[in-house]
Image 1 (tube, helix red, strand yellow):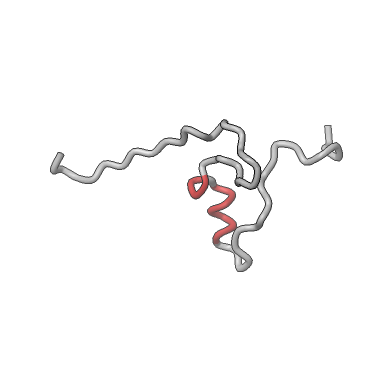
Image 2 (cartoon, rainbow, N blue to C red):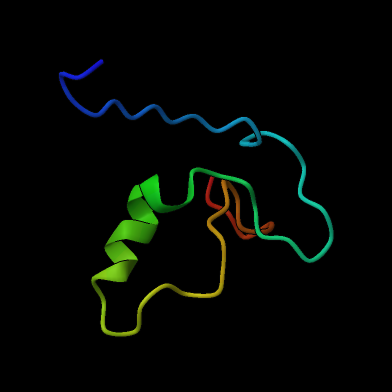
Length: 59
């Protein structure tokens, strides 16, 4: 098609378990949290977001 550039994106491994030593397989640079961290002077942290953080969660 000569009308323009078409870009398609998908993530097949988003829900696949990670192997030892690998980072979680999420959407990476498309993820809003990490994009916001890129704007901070410190940059991206070396931790990964979780749905729950231990037993100290408020219920």
